[in-house]
Length: 223
Image (cartoon, rainbow, N blue to C red; front, side, top):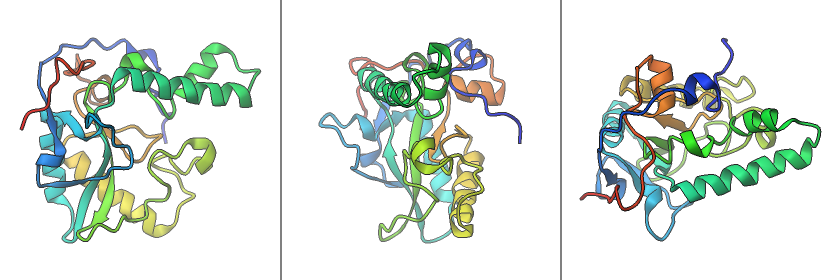
């Protein structure tokens, strides 16, 4: 398996953004996915995605085997929240590894959280998603969504081998649908998929990213 390119890598951060101006849409108003409320915020940011990402998610949902649905746990994440999450995780790693340099700490933090300046969630371009049955029962994909490498002993990595056969099959099912629909995975997080952001541009060799950071004023959801 080739080395994983992290979000903090200059090959990702150096990609320019040519903002296309697509609005955010609210997934709770659309029929093709279930939206979990575990990370719900009062403004409903967690349930929003850029329109182009949402419709690719719709295509992926139609590709799933009968009886399965996509279960979204988070889409758009405001910049201030991304900064807080990134700083809190960096602080945890700093406490555990006081000998790490600032550069190494930044790189290790980006295994689980994108640096705020390039965060796909901040652009409304990324979705954290898993699988559930039509009656809402969540499938086993090896770890909880948002498990860090430390707490999962690396099982959060998409190609981790320390998961059961059923979880591995479920990951393949999820991946097959999302890849076919045009989304790309961040390989340190089996649940994180995106389209149109800098990481997508890196994986697909696109010259520019389509989506940059969204402000709530500029990205009001559409019905």
